Length: 231
Image 1 (spheres, rainbow, N blue to C red):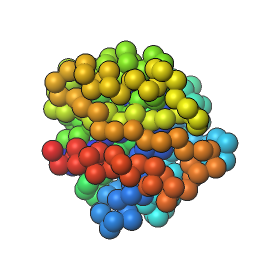
Image 2 (cartoon, one colour; image 1 turned 30 degrees about the horizontal axis):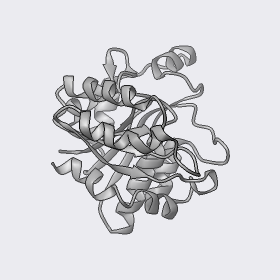
Image 3 (cartoon, helix red, strand yellow; image 1 turned 90 degrees about the vertical axis):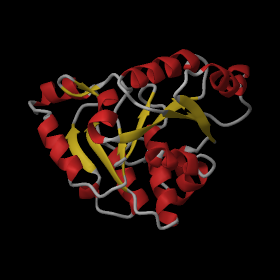
Image 4 (cartoon, rainbow, N blue to C red; image 1 turned 135 degrees about the horizontal axis):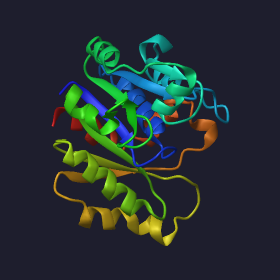
């Protein structure tokens, strides 16, 4: 495999946190991963945290030009944001850019698996197109069981051989009953071809642009998550 796609059940579930954490973890161990965000809608800082591609670049210690793809000004679905900005999203251009990336490469998706990155091409189509393993990030909260199963099924239907699910903790303090039981329920009910890789603890906003902190946060899942790319 060429690398790994990190996608999520939805937007704002922790894809970038996990992606940057995995890259920072790999960098600390001298593993030669590169990173790329093919399309980013709305790249401005949020609560002091850099945009997605910028955070990937910081995790790797490289220039933003190495991780950034097409940037669209409005935080909307890419094809909508591109249409409003008068920008053409071309899979020919994305394929060429991907071909120039050093392997292994971590590709961070946008939105969920069935969000289009270009007309007619969904995030869920990228693993087969680019020979990528898949890590699916799910926010550990009430309602995530259905969202996660639907995302997994969408990926498996498109020929993805396996999906590793990472549960991201989205708040501090004691977990709710749903949050405490979600992992066990998923482990018992995910279809063949999918498995839970583990959980990421809550990362406070002040630490979300700190690569060492992100590397620590993903430490329990990083070996299994990055191993998906060589499975």
